[in-house]
Image 1 (cartoon, rainbow, N blue to C red):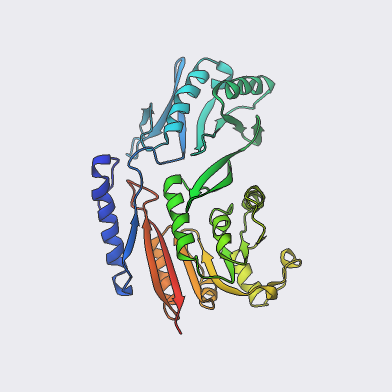
Image 2: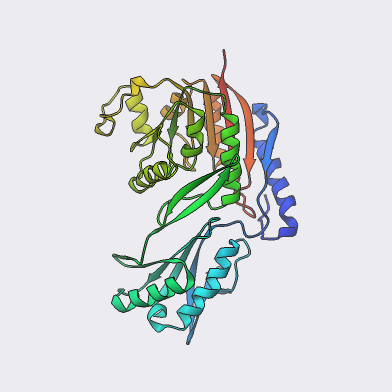
Length: 363
């Protein structure tokens, strides 16, 4: 595949090329008709990181070229960034250039924006942050109606809070999510809405109980819970588990339990190979699991976890890496048939493609 460049006029051509490569790579699987969910061509990305370039009395956002010289390039706008991000970028840099307390030794800024209208910005410094910095940051936060965090080596200063509340519309219903500064969130919120709606529609009649591995902050857990009697979700990251519990309460979902386990640990627990203190208040035998949902990292699932999925009537797999998806599916189709496949253009103008697959156990 040729190197992709940002060009809205070429968006459809680039997406068509990615879809063709995906179909070619999976030609041996005899896939059902592929559903394709497009992205907006501009202003689709909800988070971004920028280095700061100081030129005399003025500072600017910058990114560095990927050539051997690593030249810095001034960034005045980010067309792929959300409209809200672009607005806050301009307003916040004006405040920074007007205040040396905010500007001195600032070297990076990380933006997290939402469809709900909230913005969180982390200002990262090569110096210790003192009370004077907090006062300046609080004034900028109140003026711009955003949330600010200051970071330096060994220091994190939260002016008000270190998260935003996102609101996503999924299958006609609205769900709210706490998205924390350091946690993973889907970068393309509008495509995320399409992914969640697809997941609800494809699992609507599965029934009984659901196992979910790699649940993160409950992004899929919360809307999927309506399709099942009970859900047991697992996640290893402490901050993500804390955020998922917050989000369950925020959305009044009461049929979900979350266990802080890796997929490998859960596989051992379900096989009764080991006992885990984190499961001592959960009775795994009380569940009537019919389905499993997995959204693994780019490395995919290990062989044991992949084998575990084969026990259940229904499998839903969301993949951010078709290469590892292909490997895992090779095992899954020994016992299951692929019933639905969808491509979600979560990352326009890149080679990456998010893929959703459902499988049903053969009689």
